[in-house]
Length: 182
Image 1: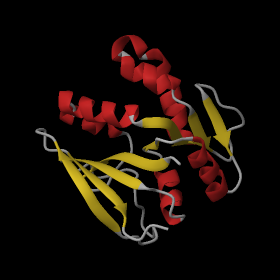
Image 2: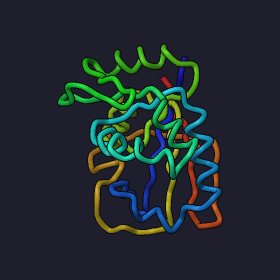
Image 3: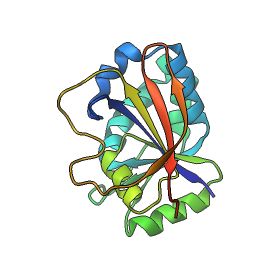
Image 4: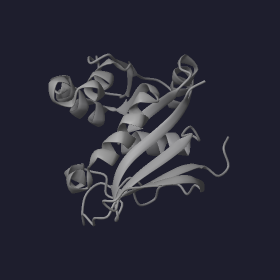
């Protein structure tokens, strides 16, 4: 059975929106880590907004990004949406009861099912107890405004630190697991 791994870029103040602010912190170590995460995945699970942004960009990036872009483009993608009617870019639309549908997706794969960004989806899955690993890629910058991963009023949950990855640029990945897995 696959496991749900949510990987999100965050600023120090918890902003995840429009992460162009991560650019100054990206280097070869970041690329190696991102490569490892993507190549450990058997599929992607995305919210509609993230899917639409990625589907518009990644198919055009194979020449500049090489094998990473090829992997991104060829992985199966599952897009959770109530409004999207059809999907391209090797994707299927997920509708219906989220817990039931995600359980079916987990049964299809042996490796990781990677969520990039997709804050609303990640929060919904956390609330349902379906996120197996939460990887918060924190960058040493305060953005000041924008959508935060955990909005005001998000249900409280507890997590256990399973590891950290630090980068010379000052960013760090906190690798977390549910403290009380279902």
